[in-house]
Length: 445
Image (cartoon, rainbow, N blue to C red):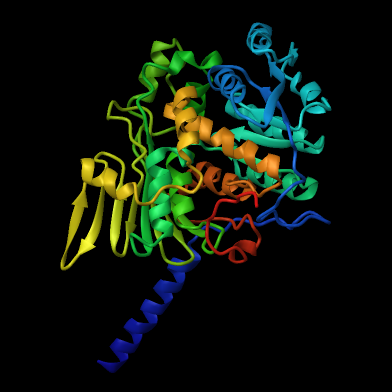
């Protein structure tokens, strides 16, 4: 019996080691010579930020409109591969008394914008595959960059952005507007004040039926991307706000990821409607991803743009003493005695009013709702970006946020293509993640 017990223990140890060694490890390249990490990086203040907007489709043209209302900046240049879009945005700005340079003609017109000395910040709203080439060229020419989501679609692209930002000492931020939605801002402040105890599990998603919208994307590029790529292709809307609540790379970091997906039941039907080849469709209708952090906390992500279930970013914070959830029911639950008290409706509004976000003044909230952009959160995102550049402050979202939130796309694919195997999440800070203690907003003194 003793021998049997020893054999069983040995087998258990071997099994445990085998399990640990089965994690797919990915290389972390050395930091470029002469570069340093960008944690809490602050550039020289820019009193009036000259912005060059590249890509003037749905998101880009709306960004031009919003930015014309943001104090401390002006749109100095616009660019699109299609001349009519570029001219239309230029005409809009001229109507508001702003003379902007207009660049167009081919897919490399952005280079002239990036070389334009009147441009301090290149604001990138192109289709996904052009995000990184524009950003790299801009940073190499001394510009800060802000990139629409998802900012990068591969690990190599994430590393290229990190390395170039570290070497050129230029800001490279992600335009993740959902970090600035009103419920998320307040719940984050509640989490920072310990209302939920210690946040130990979070959930986020991008569940959005795109049936009515596929053809609205230039050259049908978004459906094509789903047809040819597998994994969570749009992780950041759900992921960004919950990573801030977990202090990712500000005292904790992502370590291991596992993904699972359904078959592509609906995708080929959309391709058939568009008259395309349905013999191949890579992405499943629903992709689910679990991630563990260095401090033993967990994250659940979902991606679903193919089914008719209601729109949801999930956004749930689970703490040792409380919970906040936005979907499907807006509510907060707090420990009370041996049970819990649930706050909804007017009680919830009264509770959350006690924890205003430090960045959301009544004046900013009013103008954000007036200018709009997803109910105002787009404007708050733009306002904070320009405020930090005006005052020479660290940005709310840095290049490591960008890389961590975007790397899920390729890491989920690697997991799926290896039988849902666990994959190690690279440390894009290269060990510096413990130096900053907790997420916080920067303010001018």
